[in-house]
Length: 423
Ligand code: GDP
Ligand code: IMO
Ligand code: MG
Image (cartoon, rainbow, N blue to C red; front, side):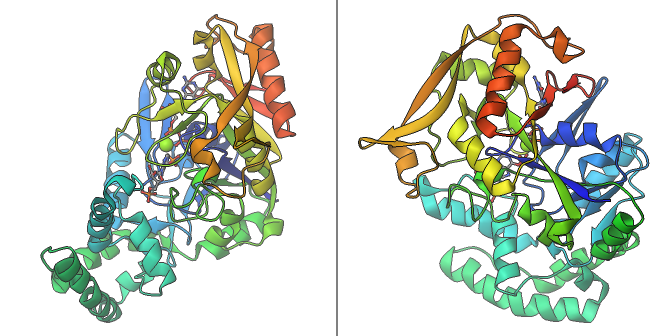
């Protein structure tokens, strides 16, 4: 049975958590394949609100096996806290499985993340300061420490000693900080290892066997296409591959395992952190998007920058992810506006761009070209089916699918599980 990938088509926070939770009702496995606790996926079920950072959103559906794949970076203290909090709220986390190959976020990663940002000053990325970038840097420079290392105290201490020698030089000499103590870290992490041991598995094998047995597997992307290390607005990106291709590498399956890629698209667009944003609105409309859309970061509480939907970016996301369909979210927020705008191209230096410009510097000074669509100005958050939507809302949905070139198969009109319409 082939698998489905759910990804964000923008700069994150498109509503992937909610969409994953809805899909999870009919799947057996939900897999995180990249990123770490920089993600914040919000799910609202009845009166309860869950903000998950590392554990796949499928955990809220009884019977689903949540899998944290090899491509993620895992802060074990955060994982254990999240498991504890969910358990305290009556959520069963016992099925969760963690890849033995996933890399660990270490205390020096968090510290260096914050220091690097401070060092960059006004040029900072605006990272979540969770140590994500430095952990991936160590993975690729082959200085990383993995989940499996926690089960071999001798190897763990040896690796840590070597790495920490270098890190302490950086901390002390470059950043004027105190050195970190290897034994203190080792003791802390070996304890985490003991607590996590029952959950650790060869998750690549687990998923391959599940697919062979006809089980349904869903991949839950974190971040979004424009934050992708290769395909995003570099350097204002995260350090992993949120795009659909990342799912195969980050879970240990071949591309043939996947036959559906759902692009979660917010009906407008937001960004948290620094970097170019052609359709950003610094006006009352942007304010309304923030207020009505509740656009504050789940992880850091930062105010999200908001703007009109960007069709150039959406077409790009369709292409680089090979989208098969779209889940359009937060369309209820657009009920606030008389007229809606969609950016169909950028203009800069006398040139019109209908594709993402090859030179990303254009993104900083281009002017968006907008088309206008009529708003509907009525509450659609109680709609039970597409037929309940006003004509203007249906036209907006149809325009989105024309732009993307793939069908919009799901429309979300509120944070609740049940505020979901299928087409
Ligand atoms: P993610 O990171 O992609 O999972 O998205 P976040 O959870 O960070 O941000 C999306 C926010 O919008 C959350 O607070 C959700 O509860 C909320 N949300 C999701 N879908 C809808 C929707 O259709 N309408 C409204 N009004 N809110 C939504
Ligand atoms: P979800 O999964 C929105 C942004 C940060 C920063 C950049 C790099 O909830 O959509 P990092 O800490 O990853 O090195 O920060 O990426 N960022 C996100 N923005 N949603 C996210 O996740 C994000 N994860 C990271 O704000 O600009
Ligand atoms: Mg989020």
